[in-house]
Image (cartoon, rainbow, N blue to C red; front, side, top):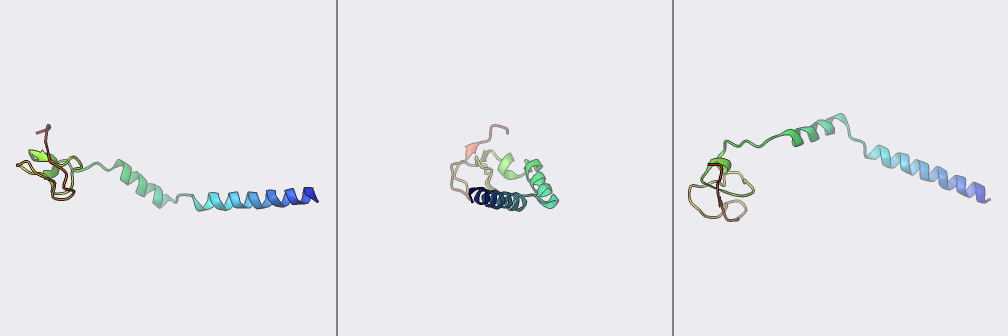
Length: 83
């Protein structure tokens, strides 16, 4: 009886493993989406990168020629060292 119980546990465990592995596979579409996210570089020609004062997070439209706070996240703007 013990042998049949262990065989049953083995079969259940095996099928659980197979089902878990199949549900986590990536399709080709998912892989290409992940590649695009990883390889995409920000557009550093916009004002959140080129202004005299910029947000550390480079929030869209947050750059300014005057010190102040970011209009998106309310963090203090810092002086752009690259300008």
